[in-house]
Length: 89
Image (tube, rainbow, N blue to C red; front, side, top):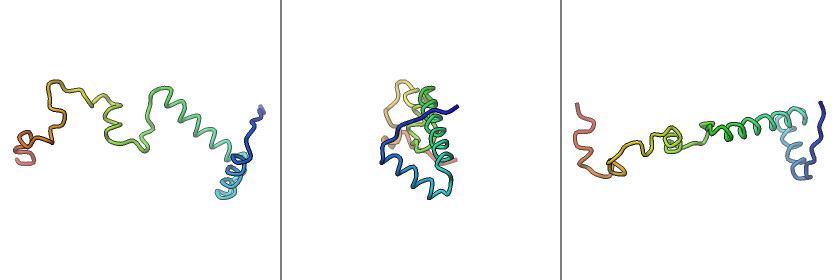
């Protein structure tokens, strides 16, 4: 099946340069770019995270760990009282 897509000159030049740099055909590069973009968009739509470039806080928040405790100080590490005995047997 063939479809056509209109690209502006800047996009076309970037894709051609990248294809040359990677030593792949223009068609192969466009296919890879579309696949990667589609995978990313579908993951976003499902609320999934790729895990790439995600901070620990972002991963913990996405997993439901942030804010899970009730009646706790916002950050236990800010009060030395909560850390007494930490790291000792």
